[in-house]
Length: 78
Picture 1 (cartoon, helix red, strand yellow):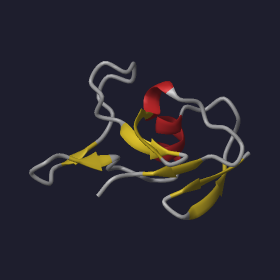
Picture 2 (spheres, one colour):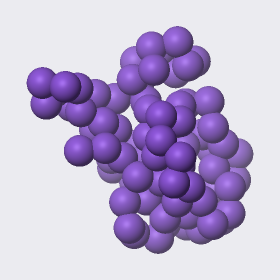
Picture 3 (cartoon, one colour):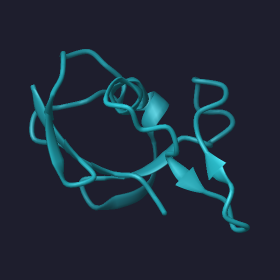
């Protein structure tokens, strides 16, 4: 299936979490803390909330708890 990540279209397998899809295409920083530190998933089960990204225009979505879907748009934070 095709999804857009940070403005680039990628073809990925169905059944992946957004976190796994981001890792597969080489995204290492999902967001940045208030002091500018790069953040990425830690727990992989939605508890740490370090994987928050914007999905289809909605912010603060947990990438580790969301499955990719055809046409999805994902934006990682600065």
